[in-house]
Amino acid sequence: MITIISGTNRKLSNSSIFAKEIEALLIGKNETCKVLNLEHLPNDFAFDNEVYGNSDAPLNEIAEEYISKSDKFVFVIPEYNGSFPGALKAFIDAFSPDRIKGKKALLIGISSGRAGNLRGLDHFTGVMNYLNIHVLPMKVAISHCHTLIDFKTKRVNNEKTIELLKEQIDLLLTS
Image 1 (spheres, one colour):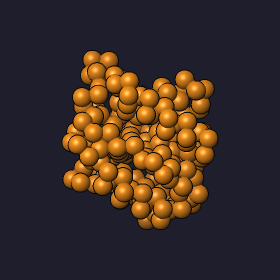
Image 2 (tube, rainbow, N blue to C red):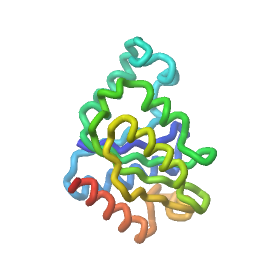
Image 3 (spheres, rainbow, N blue to C red):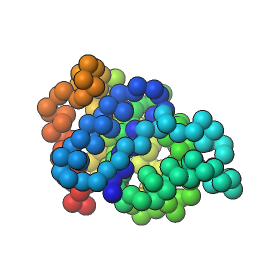
Image 4 (cartoon, rainbow, N blue to C red):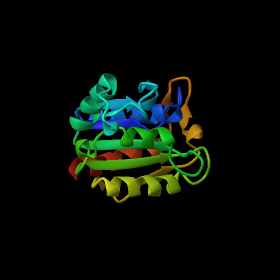
């Protein structure tokens, strides 16, 4: 199973639109996948979790369903202040590293600016490496992401971007 993580807790984010697009591409390849949108996490997840010795049932259920049961991940990571969102780091820190250790990940950075969150992808790669997660070597950096979305349909409408996503998904599936 593949989990697609929309890496922000911001409501109605561009990340969630890209995550749904990736889900559609994976379903088109008959792959089993789920989208975890961090905006649906419990409000207190960062401070009441298994790492601190607390048994938070809703967060444990999320970690079991989306992390433990998956062997591959696609992280859609928006640029926040020159890096990745704190909510994503807090989520990764909220469950035991054994749940994710040794798995594989594709990282996709998005930004409204011109760098496609390259710096945030590098920072997040460091976190993934520390957790012993195999990160695909080519990280996707999507610049000016808001210009690639049809906000009426909430779909990515740029063929070059969709082709790039398909190529990276194929690499993830064969790795």
